[in-house]
Length: 502
Image (cartoon, rainbow, N blue to C red; front, top):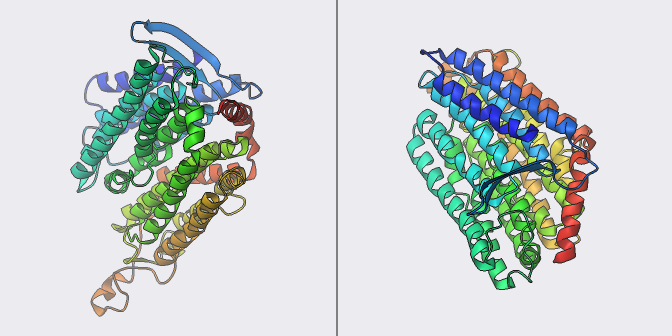
């Protein structure tokens, strides 16, 4: 029942928000949401306390027959792959609710959708039945579409529609692969059982795995399936961008490991060299595209395309070290990207622009945003993989675990890691150093009136969550054992099992 509480709390919370009597103020809705999400975080921590890191398999399992005729069972479990993602979901959804402000339009629906997404993500990470996973995977689609299309920016309809189309195609491919597995094997057993050659020929395995790769590749997203992400981030509000980058993209990388590698280990081994090259291309493209951006939010969005490529590289290598690096990368990217989007949101709210051609000198200690600028420097250092930060640990493990299997792809990905420092240094240098101004050109006499800028003080509602994320980024970098001890046994067993049957 403990794992079910991670579903009941957000789902009952969603119902409570929708059915709350009267016309509650936005502040009241926000407070109720925070209470619900704090309870969810406490339940996640209780699961962590009950979790035995020494055991490799699923723990705290719950099973109830639901619709046996179609193979849909209520089967939940948690292991070293899913537990860190459940924790990051609980933490970042709470951050998203705390930093939400100025929701005067339909606050009841806004907060209800936020909580509903968190519950759906929990269900996807905990599901041990393929159809149950798909139900939760699809459940977050419409709420996120609403959050972008109703509370987004000026071009929100276009971005939300593109997101909806891409994600709908992703879901159809994943469901098609699951149903195709039942059709080709003549079974309605949708449990997490590796599909080997004695059940399904290699050709059929590759076709089904290919559908999963494209489906989850859209969600991650990987090049060239990434087109929806920059627009979605640019138009989404800051809390939604935090949730999208920090949590929802991990449904794709989690799906690759859980249902790609674990379900089709033999076919995965056949396709692994191509997957490693695909990963390197995504890393390099994401980095180069980020360098070309002048909008801070689009730059951070393209950086996610590159950093998610590391997870595919680690999964392709399929060693205990690389898989541990994949989990570290998912968690560290969740924290770092959430911090980056939060800080970019503060800059936009205080200056009215995200254009790197316009912003200068925001680190000014008297009239600028010194604390925001300082935290931005920490965030970009972490994303660039500087030692002592979470990004360094994750990238080191990925590269160390992959270089023996795929040296060329790993070296190319290392080049992409170096390019991360380039585009984020461009961001910090242009926006935060120099003379404080918010003008296209400080040499243009027509803009002299805008050179003497006094920016408003950032509220604790924004600085405290940002400082908490900074603490998480630095803490994970200095104490990586806090995460590795949870995942090491499960990921080692997963790698060895896949290598043993491939």
